[in-house]
Length: 415
Image 1 (cartoon, one colour):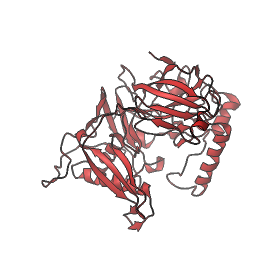
Image 2: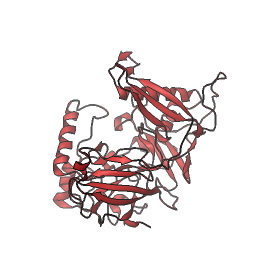
Image 3: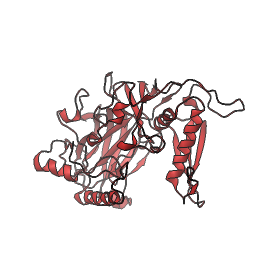
Image 4: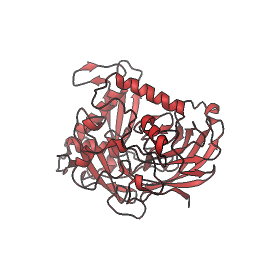
């Protein structure tokens, strides 16, 4: 049994834990625990919004979620001997929902997928789906199904959405400078181009006084991935994976959370994974001087595990870098190409009776595969989306008989 180095009582907010976690990146957040290289550890995690989303049939909670609290991270974990320039070697041994618990908090037997309203961050297809929607998923072992998306069941590729090391003061200053410069190009844009430091709702572990104030003034929000790792949302960060994180401060100060029961490539609805609290087991080690040795100058590298479900048949949707709404040709735009592939899949699934929001939620949560298929054939980048046929209890393959349209119910909507 790994050593439980960060524990969470799911009946309490992260702020009210015996040792609270944090919700900003900052080098002065005090370590919650110290571990040794070669140690196997268990980290318990709170759901990323700190329990703001409920197991119900309304998406008002997704519409009104307060993102100033996010993400709720467990840690920081100080690794003895870690110094700037090292690589922190993290093996994911196991992870899952809250063990042997059924209750009101995501991870206690259930999780959710949400489409965020455009005014509150939006998602990849926010111009097409500007309102809030939600699907609740019930867990049964490694499989899940949803009353809001009938006809679908699949095995989850369970993974952490967010883990990383603390930034150095210099790296933190670079993040804040470049992100503020981006915001300044369109300061009134909705959704915003980036999220600057925010003192409201800051949680800095056990920090108090001026240290906590400084974390609020300068601490980086946890929404994007950065050089320290952070919110990668890579579905293949699953059991058996080995991740090599750059170390920027003494002790590495490793933390994270945002556990996902499943997710499609891109997490396209913003909280497009099946979000949950739970636990994750790691083995930690160090490669001294590994950043220079392996040329890891910016982001982590990782070796995926091999325990994910393997699907052999897909219906695959293709997108190209053209704005079809205005018939505008773009140059090698892979983002627009993948967005078009997603919209082509949404339109296709509607022919079988799903609403647009239901199809969008499905693509965020199910283990779809997104691929950059071509970026050299100017002017059109080409991206593809692989939708496994086996997750449906009906045949979604094209045929001469046409799609069988049925009543697929409704996802949770906001009032």
